[in-house]
Picture 1 (tube, rainbow, N blue to C red):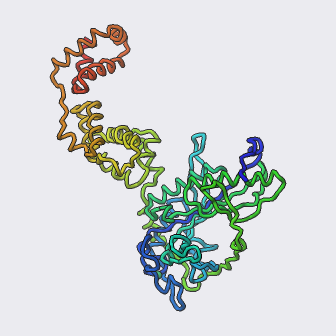
Picture 2 (cartoon, rainbow, N blue to C red):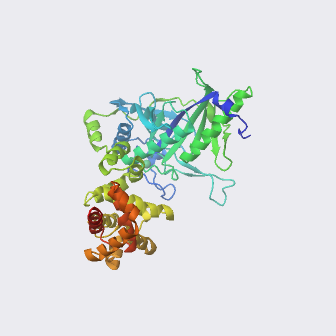
Picture 3 (tube, protein in one colour):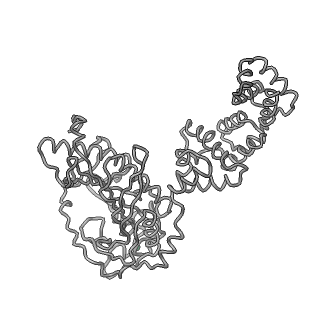
Length: 491
Ligand SMILES: [Zn+2]
């Protein structure tokens, strides 16, 4: 039953407590404990060997790259990396887990005590603690759909068995579904910047489970939590939490008790369902993995990882706000991906005026892409084209109106800026006497503005420039026009 009937007063009595567990597949070439290819989309059961199939007598060998990536991710989320961590067997039976256990880490994970900061509604930031990051292996995949006999059979693809995973567990510091959404967005941003995962949620490279409980405001103890499993988008996590919080409050308000259980989010119906499976009673019987020695992260290895850590999104945004004179929002657009931010900055540095490159990119290109509902990657205008346009504008060789017209052509015809500019070569009026005649006319037609200008309102010069520019259909040389207008008005 939907929980929409609760009044705001009732909802306000309670405080949600949320913790998130995120599984991220690491982008290594090979699997965590064998040499099989780590690749999404291969034909089923082709990237397998005795080790990842769990055949008797096979032994795991740890992939150093997986350790490097886990270390990089740990540093990026401000965790302390343990010098000595221990692999453990997590025992459970499932058809897609041929070994009957998963190699994971238990009481001694590779990293602990991290945090990330999320923006709050009042413009500040809030620190969300990260309990731990541990290294483990993924299981295979049961395929319940897509075969002619799917009604009666389940198929199994074991390619995913042994894919290296970092599991990142937050502290129960999150208090609203919005904060959960922000936390996940920031975390994904950071991980993408480090390059350790592609974080592709459709392909399952990033998966999220949310633990949520509610308690009366001011209560010390947490309420009984429910776990919402495997929600495949951040928006759905937010929606599932909103639903689950109201559901739990409704249970408590009607005198019932929240059951500790796993629940599944149904996006079509916008509600969670109890999984009602025996899985809830798991006892994983963890014990140290006898086939792997303790994992030692040496000081040298850690120092190397620190050197490989790129400038992270938050720091990069702050620097770009200062360097290019941008708003925080514009900086967020330009740093949406590391690759895009890199391309922008590499191009901007070759320009006469990097700030102008940012302006042209955001206002002219960004605006048109948004109107057409296109991604940056689909833009007909290259970064080099944007730099050329910004330089021409900066040198006064084209007016901003001409720039707009040229970009219109680029987007209409799907052509890059240099080609369009070469062909159209917009005419410019650089003849001072021609412009002076027009300026005289505009001055004569606007005596009131002239009076205000001469009384000290010098910003009105832009008005006269605009009028003349309009009269020339944007063809006046902007630098020359500015100079002449000021001279006439002051003269
Ligand atoms: Zn293998």
